[in-house]
Image (cartoon, rainbow, N blue to C red; front, top):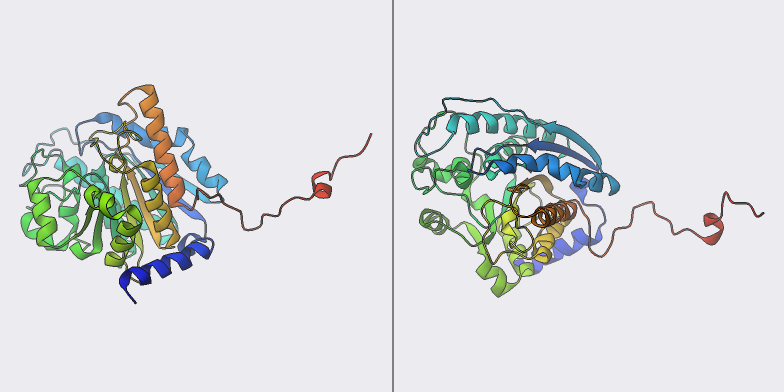
Length: 350
């Protein structure tokens, strides 16, 4: 049996089996991370509350989930947080990500799906690390316009939201210096545990790393050439061939085309359509192994009011799909079609 046939049969079985296995307990732990120091646009810190206000958590409750909202984390201020090794705000980011890691580990160990609302993508140093501490066998699906695997010395910007995976991948530690505030980070993933989808803006060092370590990578060129269905099958087969490993999905809203997610700090034309973006979320949810989710880089202060509303809507639709919302419609397990007699119960004729 070919790998594509094998993974296709596993996904088909998962889709028709009803509620995903790992989500059957229906508990979601929500963590707000209003953090923005990994990049230069402060508005991204407003996203967690704006997503709540837009109804994201109510959507999950309507779908039958027990939502445990742990609120927004508060972070320590470091007034003299000077750059180190080309990294801006290293102490602030290091302390914040350590706190995020501890909370995500606790939420995961409670048996809840850890849903982290960012904030910029630097927070994923904490979420992926914390998830790996609770689920050492996890793998990572990184849906993004950018690979965020620059090493500190190679980064052209010094913004750590573009260096996340260099701190987490074991094979890259020879390229990562000792950074003040980041000493606690222990590499928790192999490069073979990572799959990229949607990339279209890579720096030279990132392209070199991906090729040198043969990291699973599907740029928008591959999405256009192969179609999202095959891309996702191959990506899952690469990191989770038997669909038996916990999955961390790190979803950057800029993976989607700016036509559907304009309010983000680093938009890149030619991205995923809303249909492709939802398909990724739907199919990964159907595996029953999705135990950690990041939604990052929504910036509700950028663009027009219409841009902001559209981006919030898109983000909520993506997260709904991550938790089993289907475009063909959902039927609650105990749902019974009402009959005319049942519909009239409680009414009396005059």
